[in-house]
Image 1 (cartoon, rainbow, N blue to C red):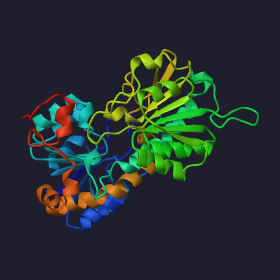
Image 2 (image 1 turned 135 degrees about the vertical axis):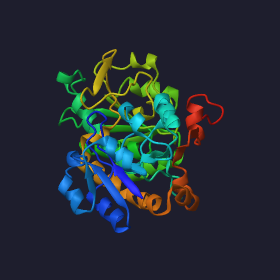
Image 3 (image 1 turned 60 degrees about the vertical axis):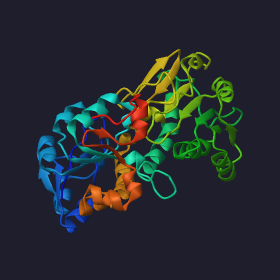
Image 4 (image 1 turned 120 degrees about the horizontal axis):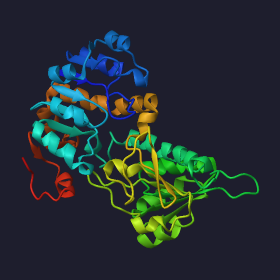
Length: 366
C-alpha cells in the first residue's frame, strides 16, 4: 500500500500523523510511505529522520494525496484539503464529524473511506485512540485554566494552590472520564479544591477511591451544576458521547450566574462543546469573554505540546495502521470488529448512526 503523511495545516497544529519509527515499520512490511516535506518538524522529526526510516519526501500536500492509497493524519481535513481527497481513498485520522456538517458533506462528496480515531473501540468499550489525547487535554486544561485565572488575562486573579493563610482555588470538573480524571490529578497536585460531577456512579466510586480527600464527587444534574458554577473559579468540561455531539450541560443563562473572571475550559469543544456559549478557538487566539467569564475553547489542545502528543498518539495508532496497510481496510475491519467501529463514512454514505442523528438525517445519505 502507498501511505501518505501530509503536513497538518489546521491553525497551530504541530503534531504529525506518523513518526519515523512508524515509517520504518511500514516500509519493513513492504509498503511505500510518502511524507510531505517538513511535516514532522513541529514535533521534532525532520526530513532526514523520515528518509533514514525509508520514507519518500514530497514537496507538496497535493502530491501526497495524489499518490497515496491511505492518508494518515492527526486532525480532520480542513477546507483547503477537501478537493484533494479522492474516491476510494482511505483517511485515518480524528474526524469528529458530529460537530461539523460541512466536513461530513465534503467527505460524503469525495466518496472516500473515512475511519475515525475517536470511534475505534477496544474489547472494554473504551476508545484507545482517543485516550492518549484526552490524557494530554485533561492535564492541559488545568495548566491553561490556571494561567487564564490570572488578572492580566481577565481572570479572577486566583492562584489555584493558594498559599498559607489563603484558601486554594476551586475547580469544577464535568465528567469523570479520561479528561476529567487527568484534570483532577493536575488540579489536586496544585493543591486546588476539586469537585467532579458525573452520572456514572461506578466512575465516581473510582474517583473516590484513588483521589486525595480534597477531590470530592457529586452526582451530575442541573441543580448541582447550577449550585457549583457560582462558587468555583475554574470549570473544566470533559463530557464525551461516543461519536455524537456533547450535551449542553452549561446553558447561556448560567454564564451570568458565574463570578466575573471565572474560567471555562471546554475540552469537549471538538464535539460541539458542553457549554452553550462555546465556539472553537485556536492557539493563536485561544479565549473570548462572555458576561465577564473567560472561555478557553481550543479544539486541538494537544497541538500545543506536539512532541509529547505525537509520540502518545502514534504509540496507539501504529498497530491499526499496520492492519489497514497489510490487509486493506475491508479485510482489516472484517477481522477486527473494534477497528470497524471507526468506520464513519464509506463511498458517499454515513455508516455511523450518531453522525446521522447529530444532523437529523434519518437514513444514511449519498
